[in-house]
Structure formats: C-alpha cells, structure tokens
Length: 322
Ligand code: NAD
Ligand code: UDP
Image (cartoon, rainbow, N blue to C red; front, side):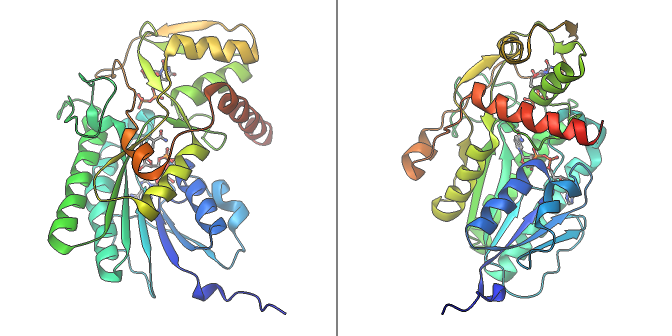
C-alpha cells in the first residue's frame, strides 16, 4: 500500500504575482508537476478568484503581501518566480510608481530571497524592453528602441532594470537565474476590463459594444495562448540558462486582422477608431530560435483556437459577474 505523500517533502516555489492571469496558471502547472507553491500577491491587478480553486490544497498558500516589502519565508525554497508587476498598459499607466517599485525593489527582494535560499530565480520580463523595435522579428540580442521618459517607460524601464538586477545578482552573488521576455499573452482568466486588446475586443463583442481600435489598426502584435507560455516558463525554469529567452507566438497579426478574427467567431461588429497611445510599438514579433533550440519549445495553440477558449472563459466570467 502506498502512503499519501507528505506535502512538506515536495520542492517549494515562491510565485510573486501568483494571483494574476499568468501567475495563477504558473501556480496550477507547478502544483500539477509536484511542487508546493507560496503565491505572494498584493492583488493590485490580480484576483483571488484566479486561485480560488487552489484554496484548501495543503500544497498551496496565498499570502496577500506587497513584493516591495521584505519577503520573509520560512523553510526551504527551490525556486522564486518574480511575476509581480502590473502588466496591462491600462494598469501600469494607472499605477506608474507601483510599477517602477515592483520592477526595482520587488525584483531585488525576490532575488535576495533566492540568494538566501539557494533557489533558482526566474524573472518575468517583457517584449516591451525592445520598445518600438527597429529590428524585426526581435531576437534576444537586439538592444531595443525605448523611450526612458515617455508614459510607458514606467513599465519598460522597470523591466529593463529588473533584467539588469537579475544579471548582476547572477554575476556577483552566483544566483542561478533565468530571464524570460514574454510577448502578448492572452487567455480565459484575463480580467474582462484588463484593457489589453484581446480581452477588450472579446468583451466588447460579447456585450454588444463597439470594438475600440487605437490608431488605424495596422500595428502588429504576436498573440500567445497562456498554456503555451506556461509550458515555456517551466521549461526555462528547469533547463534554461541565465541569458534571456523570448517566449511568444511568432504568428504576427495586425490589430485589424484581430478584429476580423473576432468577427469571424462572434459576427459583424461596430468599430470605433481612437487615437494611438503615445509610444505604442508599431510592430512586435518574437524570434523564438533560442527557446526552440535549447528547450524544444514552441507554441501549439493558434489564435483561432485560443480565441475560442478565451471567448468561452470570458463569457462565463461575464455571466457570473454581469
Ligand atoms: P496580471 O496583472 O494579471 O498579474 C500581475 C500580478 O502581480 C497581479 O496578480 C498583481 O496583483 C500582482 N502584483 C503587482 N504588483 C505587485 C506587488 N508590488 N506585490 C505583489 N503583487 C503584485 O498580469 P499578467 O499578464 O499575469 O502578468 C504577469 C507577469 O508577466 C508580469 O510581470 C508581466 O509584466 C509579465 N508579462 C505579461 C505579459 C502578458 O502578455 N500577459 C507580457 C509581458 C510580460
Ligand atoms: N489596442 C487597441 N484597442 C484596445 C486595446 C489595445 O487597438 O482596446 C492596441 C494597442 O494600441 C496596441 C495593441 O492593441 O497597439 C496591443 O495592445 P495591448 O494593450 O494588448 O498590449 P501592448 O502590446 O501594447 O502592451
């Protein structure tokens, strides 16, 4: 007869931002892979509902706390994943100081925890560190075209600083570090009014509102389904090296093409054209050669399929909270 596993013998991960859209998916995956998880989240943009299904699991704990405060964690920790940061432009423009602090002090606190515990550290960085890129598609060795004073700089520069801090702690303290640069990721657990374009269009279409296209809709993004991203994150954590990995879906779409895709699934829509936000990148597409070669990773869920799953999830959210 096999005895039930004692959860305290499992490796433990600290996931900052664990009640967020991506972070909660990472918690799910780590638990499924046999980890214990401490999620640290101040709920500034995340939601308890994202991890409600995990409450009561003895392997999971949610600590409502700011990553900018010292991270006191008892006992062993094998991995620290720093995902705590507002991520939607709508959110980080509303929380500019908090965003800078999460990227700077929050990242240092998470790095210090990893150093103290001898844990592997993973930073969730972003394609935004490339700014409005002049190289296409973007490879990890591209240095970027970023405004350091514009409104988006609170996010872009916080993440650039966080990458610099991660590399410095790797070189100086010998912390085993990972950096991932996430490109636009979407999925059913996003907040309906998150403001990012996929959720914005799906929710607007479901509620019969006009779709809000910023600019002329010719700017491009490359949309990755969340399960693919989470799979990339665990691969980088397990087998990556300390240099950055782009994680995103290399299929590139104009925003006008995204409107067409939503119309194909949800019928004809009215469209309202609004001014393009300042410093909105014109094109964005990852070169994922490094993740493909080192980790055998590539996205599997194409936009039409990911959109169907996202529409279903957001429909349920809107029904539960009209
Ligand atoms: P999200 O807003 O859903 O999740 C961020 C989480 O971090 C939230 O739960 C929020 O409450 C928490 N948080 C923010 N500041 C905090 C603080 N100071 N202390 C504790 N918790 C804090 O956004 P997301 O899309 O899930 O993003 C997760 C991470 O991935 C972020 O670091 C983001 O920069 C990065 N990222 C995401 C995308 C994407 O397309 N989803 C793209 C690039 C980078
Ligand atoms: N966008 C849009 N309508 C919206 C929200 C966003 O046209 O309601 C555009 C935005 O200007 C950008 C792209 O969609 O060009 C992606 O925006 P998002 O906020 O999802 O993420 P970003 O890539 O800018 O961080």
